[in-house]
Length: 193
Image (cartoon, rainbow, N blue to C red; front, side):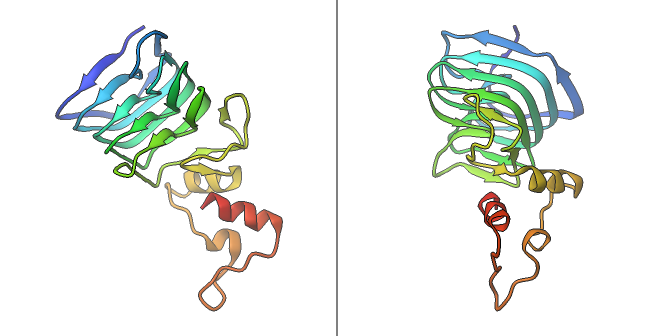
């Protein structure tokens, strides 16, 4: 039952290491995660595996509230917020940046719940960061699309291709500058982009 209450400055570089079986069970406290609140600074190159995080609200696998940068992070496990603003990686992305990151597992909350980010403000940036909507359970259901959601085929291609995804893989080359959607499957793929 360990967590870092806040990161105010500097950098935490996990150097690609994996932290397994982290448990943060604080159901009466807001702003919970491996790091409760990131005010500034960078957390990068870290894998959190088989985590269990429970908090009141503003709950994420990595951080409950982000105003810094998360880069090349993966988080898998169970994240539960008894209130709102709960995400697999970040609960509330205030003015932070999430880049090249992924989340998997299950996320449960009352409101503002997401597979990757529970709530992204207008100042928050989520870039090239995703979760598999067919595998991540949001409030008990898979197939729920929120910020960063990709369907299984797209998600697998993204991971297998060094976290890059090419729309022509799913739609073929553009016709007259536009991608043509001919099937329900292609519409589903488009919704993931």
